[in-house]
Length: 375
Ligand SMILES: Cc1cc2nc3c(=O)[nH]c(=O)nc-3n(C[C@H](O)[C@H](O)[C@H](O)COP(=O)(O)OP(=O)(O)OC[C@H]3O[C@@H](n4cnc5c(N)ncnc54)[C@H](O)[C@@H]3O)c2cc1C
Image (tube, rainbow, N blue to C red; front, side):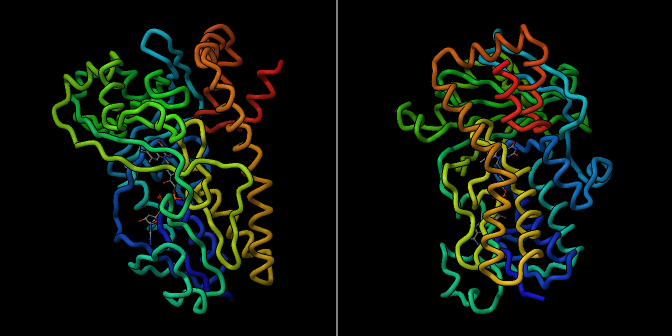
């Protein structure tokens, strides 16, 4: 059996490690951090992410039993402002779970499946210098955005509020606001991430794409403050917060055209392969799914070059069409009235409202939304 090194033990690396170890490979998982560790994120675990982690034997009942903090989500609000917005229920439940908690569940599954773990930082593409290239038959690069091509930036804060100060809806609803001050594709979010106790933790943040960010001539902290100030809900929530954790900034590696995900015996997965959604910055589902498909490429192939070719092929057949559709929708939204038109359509046409919400929640791919908008 080939020896496999997986560098990066986030959702992508743990998923690849789990599936490879389950199929009998000798897997060494490496990460620069010890676990549990935090990852700056919106903590939104979409319905597609829930489906993807079920392939690792993690089901919603396990989340409810094992996670110390979580929030089941069955409502999504998309808006431009508090007045121009649309809220839609989803039948299937998504979750919000602090990554400190969620990533630990995945890490324990990978270790339980037989991966060994070492704390090691691998600089840039220094596989040769650190002896990894000769010691392992396949290297899976799952170092997240530090190995991908950065094209967006985001900021996240945690606020704690008393349950009595929040509406019932605020406890089950993920809100995404396409605030115009964040550029046409930028957005702010308000996600409840821990709703089991009397003190409720909220994740509030802002994401901006770098091509627009440079034109905004400000910085991400100012944009975050502006979002809170412009939005009635965040203004009120902040005034009621009993504690706050200072905001943290982190880059994103969202989809790009003509993506190559393999190079020699190195396979890139998750954010290292720019698999994050270029509309919502959601990347956990594709990170976990890419770990599964890269493991399939290893299992289906006899030589390192066949593994690389098969992973590129599986990437193109399972991820590229959806990411390309999302890039096309992103390009449409450059037209100034597009965000308003989308909310207007959602308010008037229940089918469009359901399809857009389901695409954002990760139930259907974006190419289906594009097809339905044509009719
Ligand atoms: C602010 C923000 C909000 C987001 N919100 C959401 C959301 O709500 N929902 C969603 O689905 N996605 C969201 N995303 C995207 C999501 O965080 C990523 O897509 C996801 O974490 C990718 O998983 P990954 O395993 O590829 O990388 P990561 O989760 O980044 O894991 C990479 C791992 O590699 C390790 N590593 C890094 N460098 C090295 C090195 N040199 N050597 C060894 N190890 C290394 C890290 O310690 C880490 O454990 C958000 C991103 C940001 C920045």
